[in-house]
Image (cartoon, rainbow over all chains, first blue to last red; front, side, top):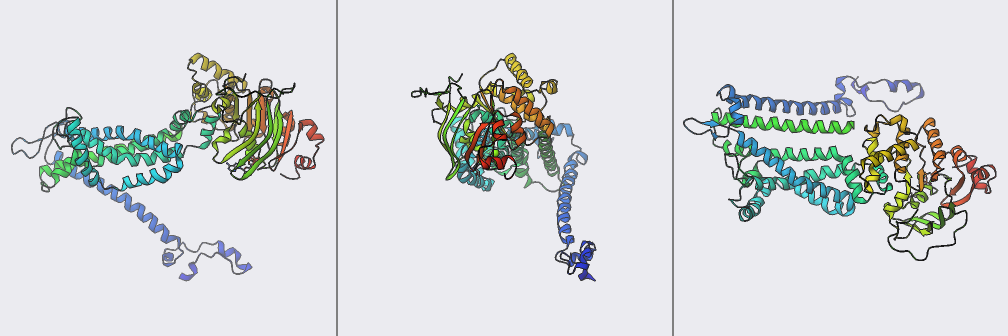
Length: 322
Length: 270
Ligand SMILES: Nc1ncnc2c1ncn2[C@@H]1O[C@H](COP(=O)(O)OP(=O)(O)OP(=O)(O)O)[C@@H](O)[C@H]1O
Ligand SMILES: [Mg+2]
């Protein structure tokens, strides 16, 4: 009876014709059949459920752990978010002010996006509008290579090139918010570039023709027609780059200086949520207050990352309507 | 007039222009895509303030010919043209011609409506902004004028700031015509402007073209024989890249000189 469950595709004789229309493979046992729909379904649904469950599990775990410092250790949430003093390991009167790190993370992210976006969109336009052949052959592989370089390499280059450069030309130790933003800016450059290039390529040639037929020059066409038409995807590209910058730890940690107070200028050393977590993680024991506040920092990181995702959703939804 | 669009002084202009003075005079025009000879030895005038229809089976080179007139074919990689298209005695195909200026004098409307994803108003004034016109009042006046000419004003006057994509296909195409009028071109090239539209929108466009020909010279590619018969003064029949027959529309449709023309018009091929 199992071997009846084949999807019959070719009726063997004319008076068999109608039968081929009857679905035979609805039974779960047909999972043992090579051509069964069930196998595919189980695999696809299974993966989807697995992904969703892992996201929920991570979120829940982080939430529970992150709330411990407020619930178990009775740290005030407002003080935690707005405080500027971070001395969790001080024996008497420890203080847990995470604002410098929240600020540092946001500043690195925004500065990196501001530095990277113009270059990224410029190169995207170059490789799509100006020199498609050359861009396809040379720039595209370069960008793929940039994506593949591990962040420790970026950090190392930052440490040995950017930091001394900053020290000589901007002053201070050279370890600073700006150095961090520069390194991360280069790291997110390929992300923004490749999504932007896709966005520009997706602009219909009909619009370009319309523009040229109205006596537009190439630059006018790019600036007044192509870029506006691609706008929402370009913004998405930048926000995605920012999301990546926001989560980067290692490379930033190597050049930012890891100071625990609020910086007065972008040339001052600073720290970010991710860098303080990676730095302090090693010498905290599970269940200790220090460990709990690090989880709380992680929770803030997660919430802001979700914010980025919501922002992207919002932008792309709006892009579709207009 | 056509003053400005030559970058440098051109050699002696061709004086031997006839009295009937066509706006455009095509002389031994050949167009190639790489090795492919798409348009062969075309000779024909295009008369002022009249409608010239280009007909012929698919792939015979109508669009190619049309795009060459305002040098839109320059944008296609590998396309090149030989011969002359004279416009007021100036050969449009030489490299001395300022194509940007040329396209402002010879406008174009495409087969698929292609409004910019911007407001209706922005669609109309963008070309003026390209030309450096900034005066708000002037932009508004021109926009209204163009919409009236394109018989679209009454339908959209209350929603000029709405997206052009919110218009119906037929309205979008009329907007594209209005947009092409903003720069006050001499000649309007239309490549199957109503083939993507329903019969009602299509006949609106025909009415519109009949009205516009009082002011503009119109060249239209069409696959619709009735449309050509209804609106065109002159008709040119293309076949496999050659101009088989050119003449008065009524003449061509009643007494075609060539067998191939007759076969095509009566629907025997194509
Ligand atoms: N971009 C291009 N690159 C190469 N060859 C082309 C290109 N556009 C057109 N051709 C060729 O030139 C010839 C004429 O094409 P064209 O588009 O001018 O025909 P058409 O008369 O407008 O046809 P249709 O009625 O289908 O629009 C065809 O053989 C076509 O294959
Ligand atoms: Mg065509």
